[in-house]
Length: 430
Image 1 (cartoon, helix red, strand yellow):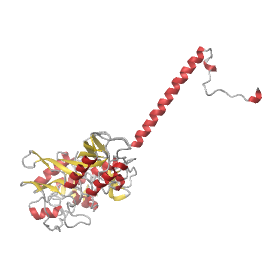
Image 2 (image 1 turned 135 degrees about the vertical axis):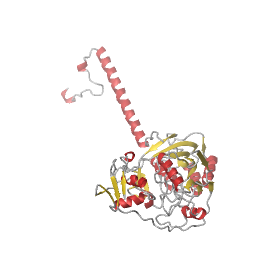
Image 3 (image 1 turned 90 degrees about the vertical axis):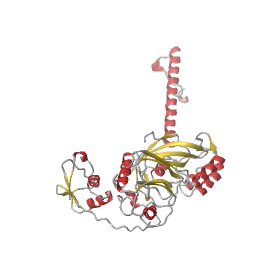
Image 4 (image 1 turned 180 degrees about the vertical axis):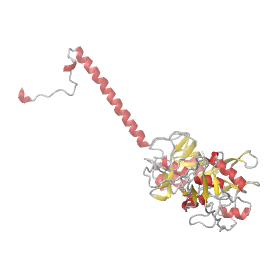
């Protein structure tokens, strides 16, 4: 099939162009066709990063065949917050995988949706992801919006792309960020030393996380976060990168590694908090979107899950704080230095869905910018440099004062010897 490039599509990547031009295909389908050499421009096979220009004709020699669904409906209880003929808002519980992936074929949210709504779900993301517009990690509970038809799905997907669909998260992190509100702007990609984890890497996908500190405790802080981008494990990676892992996070140093940095007097309380926390204390608590049919802004909110709330009650009782605590003897000692991989172990493609390779990864999201705080090592280095500069200026002022005093005593400038540098005389010459 042939597809002519219009003027308004000039400069688009070829996979994105074909997703918009072809019907009922996903970007993954298109990327497979490109990799197989089935997409050509001007008679030549198009590479995956090729950008189309106005007037070009893109030839697709083979249309992808839709795989038949192997997803079986399962009677999984759903906490439905809102439902109409276009969308469903669900409060996903902890320990529930959103859709089948590596090593996970049953017991997914997708199977539960298929059981409860049958054929009344969008098919845009294929038969294994009926109605799924966005995702959450297996161990991250919270609000998700599900599309009941393809029109609603595309409308919601456009909102995600243009960042007009907002999801707000609450997270309890170790310690307290120096900036009580701001943005962490650091690229995220696969951890080159551990494929099961993500990390801040050179050449990773652009990622921004906005945060505001809401409540303070002796060794932890409750943050409200929004995402400007939606990367795998974004909040958890950025929290660890800033030196303040999410409490209870088993993958990004949020458990025993952080417990060892808590002051001895508070260690028992911190250990109790980790016993209560089943995994990372992170939850999608609010979602705002434009309704696909009415065009009106709708908002939904849920309370914190019980383990999260129980930990907050414990900390409020045992170690409350009216303001952030930065004393290293009394508060959490942040991680130093930040984890960042500068070596480019592989090329990261912003259009590739890396999430499918990792059963632990299940998360796109939203947020805005602010300054990134300096590491403790950088602050100490700046402090030492400032002190050295101050000493040098003091020595210079002292020398000028000594030279003035010498001139008053009749000593010429060229004959002046700075105290402490007088030449010594060999006693044998006297």
